Image: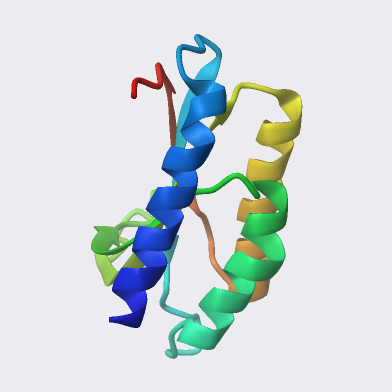
Length: 133
């Protein structure tokens, strides 16, 4: 129930912030995929994840974002015979103006996560969107 309430609060924050973005042509939707498996065999704990959101993501995007629980898989493209890695995943979706400050914030989020949790990458997609209410 706690996860559901947290996600609803984030969606409401995003919708509330959407008024400022409505009709804008310079808005992008950034989607970041965070694997939760750690190199030592553990996983990112709920406490670590909550701290990451509070200390790293929220200060860079205080107007809101959405977090989804997911399950994903990937293979390391740098290894010829890389195994398929399957793991629990968290997805953060951020709708924001297309600015260098926002891009810098996205880069900082990815860098912090990779360094803090020993991750090789954070998958990142971005697309131009138009906010409609």
